[in-house]
Image (cartoon, rainbow, N blue to C red; front, top):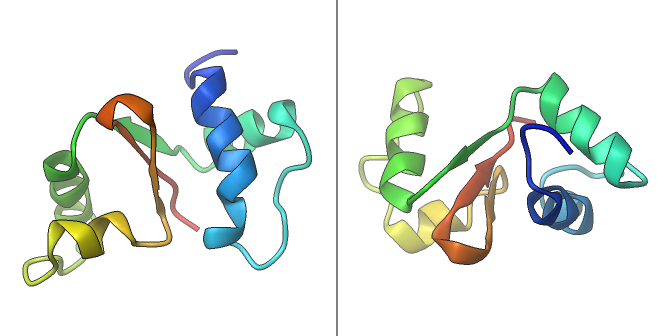
Length: 87
């Protein structure tokens, strides 16, 4: 596995339905390729999720941390990190 940990890829594969109506990957290799193609990023905290979304032009000023964590493109990872996948 390259840029993304196996655990990160596995979580995306298991939870891809929160962002997409139909599966975009059937196995770990396809999931990793998809994450690379869409330039998904891993950040270390919710504040970094907020910062990323602001940089992307999204208005997240009035959104609580809980609501931010529930956004369909945000996948919580073990250890407090987050995967952000733009759909």
